[in-house]
Amino acid sequence: MGRALPAEAAEIAAGYAFAGPALELGALLWGGECLADAQIRIPLPMLNRHGLVAGATGTGKTKTLQLIAEQLAAQGVPVFLADIKGDVSGISAPGEAGDKVAERARDVGQEWEATGFPSEFYALGGIGTGIPVRATITSFGPVLLSKVLQLNQTQEQSLGLIFHYADQKGLELFDLKDLRAVVTFLTSDEGKPELKGIGGLSTVTAGVILRALTAFEAQGMGDFFGEPEFDTSEFLRLAPDGRGLVSVLELADVQDKPQLFSTFLMWLLADLYNDLPEVGDVEKPKLVFFFDEAHLLFNGASKAFLQAITQTVRLIRSKGVGVFFVTQTPKDVPADVLGQLGNRVQHALRAFTPDDQKALKATVRTFPDSAYDLEEILTGIGTGEAVVTVLSEKGAPTPVAATRLRAPESLMGPVEAGVLEGAVRASVLYSRYAEAVDRESAYEKLSAREAERVEAERAEAAAPREKAGSGPRGGGSVVEQVVGSGMFKSLLRSMGTQIGREISRSVFGTARRRR
Image (cartoon, rainbow, N blue to C red; front, side, top):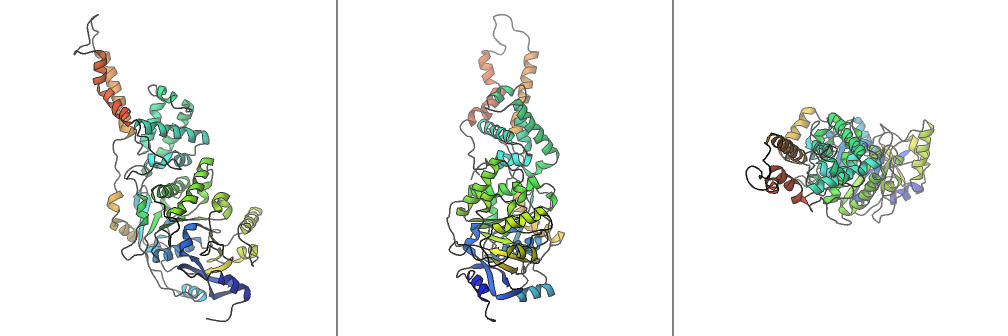
């Protein structure tokens, strides 16, 4: 050990002297010095109490995610990361030694060793390099889909009624064309009587939803929905050596579709919540899920959507999953969600404009009382430094600690495109999810029904008039002929045999996975 710590620094350091397993974040900054003997840490069992990584662009948030993900993986905890800019794939490869890394390691008391971590790479709908991740429309549900389609509250409720109708009638909604087919049917002359039977759904609103779906599909969004649907339990796997698998969702090719990818991230989290059993407090999380660009999730969100997020975050902890929201300032996250984030890593903030200054003051108010002048610290700390407070092993907030963070041991940047492609093709999951499948569902059933209707009308128009008093040609009554028709049998298959099989839905309106 080096020289004795100043009294205030020693008091802060004592708050991070945990007995059990912990993640090493870095060393305490105090009085303009980095004190390598005062280590700042997060207890491993507290990672499922959720967290926030925040800070202005360019302050080191991505490297902080990488640092935390590495240490979680090393301790046997699987991790999910969204890679917005395409620079997180380096976590799979050993880092590169250099003067800056050596200096950082020396400052914070880190024994740095270049290390790559076991990783899987995914891509939404297969757009980009990665194992395709798709969801069925039924599983995605009306609340999340309304967010993607930017529907208002009334339209969201109406879409929920359409899902309810499809559930009852056995019209499976696997992809966008299935949902479009159902809405098209309900707005047609044949379907309007059924539309009237769906309480509160007007023809005008159904038309608005249909136009939104058509425009959405025209933008090439159909690839994200369909089968095979991704099983989110894949994220819970360990590597053969016992380390946690790092699942990286590559979003660089869809970063211009923020409403879509942020809502898709929420679907992944909601699906995990639906499927995982209750485990209570655990020695280490089953999974830690990093939700990057979190402000996109909350922008323009309906009341129902926000309530569902809040409930999911609150309850998923008991299923062993920790969630870290990553954004610029705490004010990007609604208060009800922010209050559930026990671990905080706040990088530097700018205070150039009145709005910046307001955000700075709001951020300071979210921290416990501190020995620091937090307004000064938060505008003065450098890249790779942050203000930290976490939950102790007893669940109480630790003292606020300005911290110089450790350097990641994996590559701080993307791997080469060929290496990434090779890793995706070599995955055991690639053959399972690579090729899209189009089973019979609502689109095919409604198309067949329409074809049978047209054929029946054509046959009726071509049939000669029967003589008065004679029965229909071919024998049997009219009722018998109708009951025996292909159209009637199709209706029975699609409707009658499905009554009572409405899909059980969760807090987001997403369908529960059938095992």
